Image (cartoon, rainbow, N blue to C red):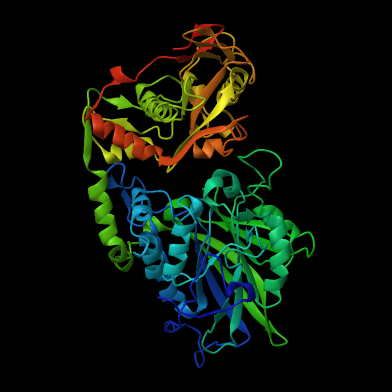
Length: 589
């Protein structure tokens, strides 16, 4: 489905991750208004940019955790239906298709692919090639499975995979292709060059610290200042794929580059015509930012996550003194629900999809009762205790014979999904994967009692402050300030109260072990996932504490293995009511 050959740019010739050079493709279909047609103007040209972002492994319109169609129509195959429609309408030669990152992680399909023979074609590469993309930027989740998986994907796909601010720490050279120049040959018009620059949020250096050894993630603004002038000097149109949101918000601590600086780049770096926004999973088809240097408007467009929409940007170009200039841009949203899935894309991934469906439906254990995560964000539930128990057992066994062998092992779990449930009776892999939806690995650190208290105080900021009197629904307090559920941690191995009538930072009113109140100088081993240990969520101490366990074992697989080995999931084996929300010492309920 490739339609043009990208111009090879200097630093892209030899890349650390081996991006493939696409082959020349067949020209696109006829375009209305071509040479010889009424109203043809060789000095005026309309181009269309189509963009997706944060697809997260969704090709089929299918929820693997529910073993049913997705609750909303989405997926790359449906997005392809929208893309094909625009190509048929506009003529493929005038349409450029890009993806804004986070494509290698997010479903059991991509999890399975990461475990497969690296020589096999990645199903997401097959899907994107079936659509026919022109360029793609890496998102932070492209590093979840390590650099070898990313390298295999970049070798598989027919388009360049970009990342201008991803740098080889030893040489200072780009580790991924910084940009691509796409020569578009629309019949009856002078060729136009579209430069596409890729930038990704630098949080990967924290969130996937152990998977990105040898890489440096530069400040996106600084990288844009470095690369946009080089692209603009060679291109008629400059598009920046920015796997980051707007507003400068950050989910990692101080002293690191801004996580979401897309609007800052548009405002401060001259020469950009269009920026594709991502990472924040928002649906914002059109936003405009005035560049402070040129006074010109820069169009920002963010398609919705999971392929639920495709951003369409129409660009009006006029030829002035033999050169193309962008005179206007408009954006709109193509809702994937309005288009039938592309059979071409479905066929490309069908075998991998069917293998994934069979895998997730394997029965691994029997649950003695139904266990639900619906209320886990505001009350102690056995299903989160299940996660905590498996993690604690794994770490405790591994510490035998080490200096930490006699330390109490605490375990952190978070309510990743409100819909997760183990039914009474057969429990499948998809039930467990629906509870633990992320591909995190297990680690453990050593913390003092004072540090454990600080950690719990940070977690307790998840709740809004309750009124001193009157009725209060605990559910209404959860998620204060938009804090996501995955940034609320519960801790097993200690007993504690969270007094939500107190201000944030002074809410842990009781913190005990079986031996009594926790002292500041007590020592504990705390089992956490790699995201949290690397600094994700900004929890104190954990990212700098001594690491005492890290065998790179995936937590989800540990849960599956534990259930499979026992054959029975019985809350009597792990459930413990060890924390509660209180108001003035009185439990909320």
